[in-house]
Length: 350
Image (cartoon, rainbow, N blue to C red; front, side, top):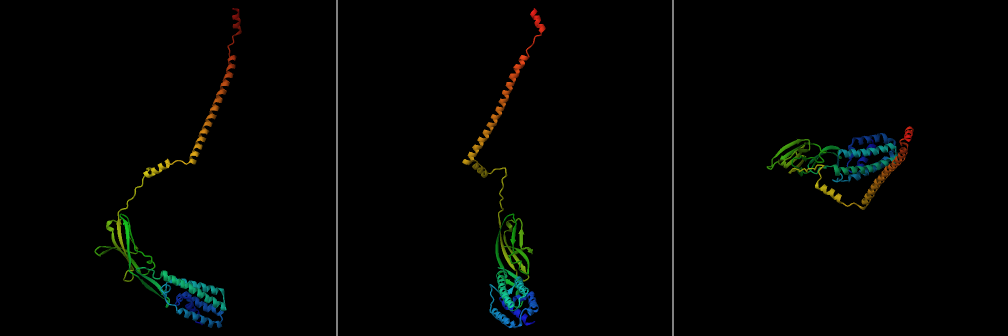
């Protein structure tokens, strides 16, 4: 390789990382630098600036050689996710510079400024990994795959803590389900785990295997007083020793008493008292006034309707009486019996 590729590798090793050249463990970064040296540098960097640039890189390398390992920020290892995150950030900024087609001194300045920023960014990623993801188990033995930045080796690291993860008290009412949960939050991230084994522990220091399998919980339905006592959960690993041991102390409580719900049609004493108290409460003056006005309006309407109806009825009676009186007299005069003239003459002669 030419001097440009060596220079860029030194720049990444000295300027980007808070310790050894960890980002160089990603093959995609190596390929990107080869492309930069072969395709970009020949037409964008004058050969007379190589010496000055190399001196700056060497100085940066010396500065970072003085950094020491710190259990809170950097221990010389990262996981795959942290490495991928740092590599992606570097490649994105490197592509941004090459796409801009910058040349000469401006190219050198932008390159080293980008490396400076990427150094801080990657340092943040590593510190977060060290705090949150590096051996996160508080107890037991976790098998975690890590990458050693010094030689880029990927190995399984055993995060060893106390095997005993404590005792949990479980209370369950009689005739209900008992559930013992043996899973911890780091179990899913650990490697080399096998089966969960649940044991019933007896008073004479003996124990009986209750269940074994991939499920992290033990469930027993409708427990009784005989189910109370001590239990133990053990998570196996590919190593000879278990990864996790959790003890359970189960207490069976008396059967839960279910309260009988009253029928909807039955009024409980409390409800009756409430209703009666609501009934006996005095009405407010505004409600009383509204009630009285409404009553007066109803009675006034009824009286008015009754008066109108009576007036119409009386009017019809008077009219009928007058008609009958007038027409009755006229018909009486007209209907008087007339004596025939002959009979009248005869009577006069007689």
